[in-house]
View 1 (spheres, rainbow, N blue to C red):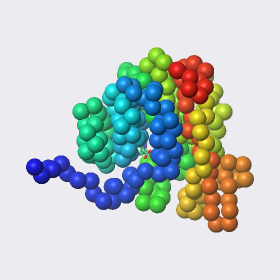
View 2 (view 1 turned 90 degrees about the vertical axis):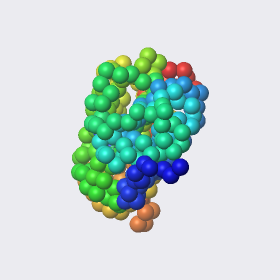
View 3 (view 1 turned 135 degrees about the vertical axis):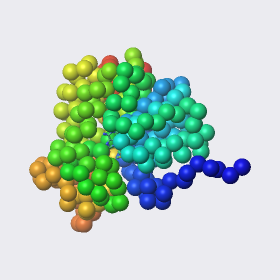
Length: 239
Ligand SMILES: C[S@@+](CC[C@H](N)C(=O)[O-])C[C@H]1O[C@@H](n2cnc3c(N)ncnc32)[C@H](O)[C@@H]1O
């Protein structure tokens, strides 16, 4: 029987393509499969839906995605349906926590826009893809502040966190609601010239040679995958 669902336009596919951040997030999640099996999962900023797909493949009980872009919801819906996860998926177009007000989850994933720059279309992405405002914290702070009231008891979050966005401030914000963080892994991502030239000048000045590494015309940045929970968490710890 022919598939009557509308296909996603190629341009939308391209704009939502996974990045090195996506890959690092999936890598960290895959090393922790025991905690994902049967978990109620939420992803804020689900984009193409590929992180939810990876969580579905790891045996999550339910998959909830929130994204501000219509194309992202359409893409996630197609992908999760194609991969046989449609029956356990819920997708909402909306802003951050608003569509899931009052709900709690065992695992919350996020690869939020938090590159320190003002909104701009870079490398064919939508302006909402990467930009986190001057200090990169525009969405990150809202996410971290609202996290505790959406985590189930023993629940945790796994997120991408640029090393050139103040991790200490994230730790302090989380501590106010009884949460702590640990770095699960750190990797390098390539920063394209058109993105680097938009980076907030103060941040670039402070981080150049520290968390930003240049080799001639090629630039890389350190990115952490951070795990967040209510108790002090360590490798392999049940949280
Ligand atoms: C860096 S992309 C990550 C996409 C996908 N999770 C991945 O890793 O490939 C960030 C996503 O956050 C979404 N986003 C931006 N602002 C948002 C908001 N206020 N609420 C929910 N999602 C938002 C964007 O549309 C985009 O899909």
